[in-house]
Image (tube, rainbow, N blue to C red; front, side):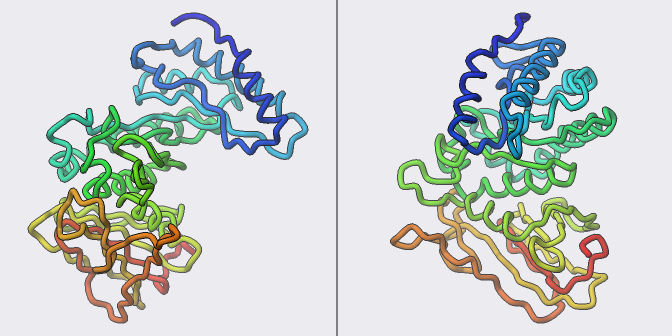
Length: 341
């Protein structure tokens, strides 16, 4: 595809939202047209010119406004050479956010999704995408930041009783932890509702397990990522952040093993009292659409209210215990981390 973008339709839409005083977070140009593209592709030079035109359009439309939406691109699958050239050729200030999509599990029709989700080596395969994009942004020395603009794990709407069940929280939370480790600023989940990978059940609107995983992440994990030295099995995924809106730190531990209980001793802390949030599947069924927190089934009230997510209070310095096929958030409010001060 080699033609200049005709932005008249986009200008009409943007102007309409400005006239209505709608709050718009950002305008993104394109969907899976970068790199090799999906069905069609746009070359780097044309994409740079078109993003520059979009930024000029947004700046003009929002002139005099207290804030303007972000300009995002390209919203495609990561291709190192293409992304590197795109950012290198972009003019300073012409792009706010560099977006990419993640469907690393393959098609939803695959019979191997659960095996892939529970395989730490397969999960690790996505680290190169995050680290390479981080390196490209650092090397370019421009102001753009990295977002995952769309991620549903398995494309073509996912798979019922996999991407909308408990087992998918292993993939989802690992993605949140891994992307944050490589300085990804925002992670957009596909979808809130729709397909077989929604956070909400598309028929009942009840929360699927990943909704509660996302909610606990949002409440407990701050934006500052900490180095965490774990020497145990690779079947236990480990992430550490400064706590959100609280003192101390929060650890996320994911046990991919169905046979082994993982024990993690936290050192270098004088006060290891903590709040623990243990997530398991109802009846131990990984494909259950019901999440259990500390032994209690999570379900909405008759009026649709979200249940209170109550932690277990641990008053001693005992090791963290992560049961087989379970997830643990552990908040240490009195743990002194210099980076969290």
